Amino acid sequence: MHKRHIVEQIVSIVEKELKAAKQAALESAEEATDEESRAENKYDTHALETSYVASAQAHYAKDLTQALQAYRNLSLADGASGPVAIGSLVTTLGPNGREQFFMGPARGGLELDTEQGPVTVLTPKSPLGSQLVGKTLGMNAGPRKILRIE
Image 1: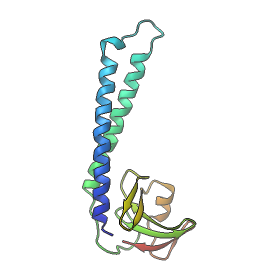
Image 2 (image 1 turned 180 degrees about the horizontal axis):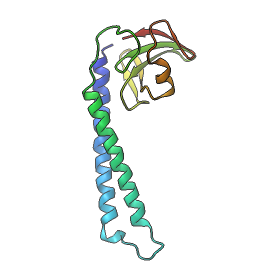
Image 3 (image 1 turned 120 degrees about the vertical axis):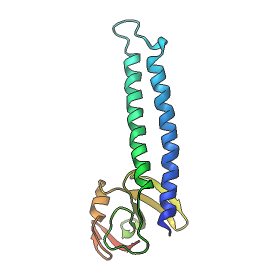
Image 4 (image 1 turned 30 degrees about the vertical axis):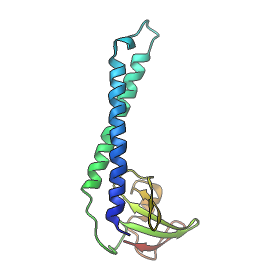
């Protein structure tokens, strides 16, 4: 399996998410500052609520921008590269059978469909990701045994 193809899939997904997040943030900001959002009385919090939503969506868009940049700057080693690190494609055998994980710098939890089966993106901050980082072929990471590192 080509790690570059996995990274390209992730970049494509994050680009789509970023486009949607920017649009949502823009729409929320426009609603928060719209004349019709002015408070009608001291108990009317609609404008305040929409400003919180706009702020959260802008923060989410910023996080996606950083994730996109991290994947675009990611250098990938070809073949087996020693211990598990960011950029590693890891095959494990565990309670759920064989599973494949891509250790990424961001966007953990993404599930990708590849020609060789599903791949889940992990980050070193996740519980499983932190168990895998630094491990080598044949070692155990919790209940999983590492079968392959690319």
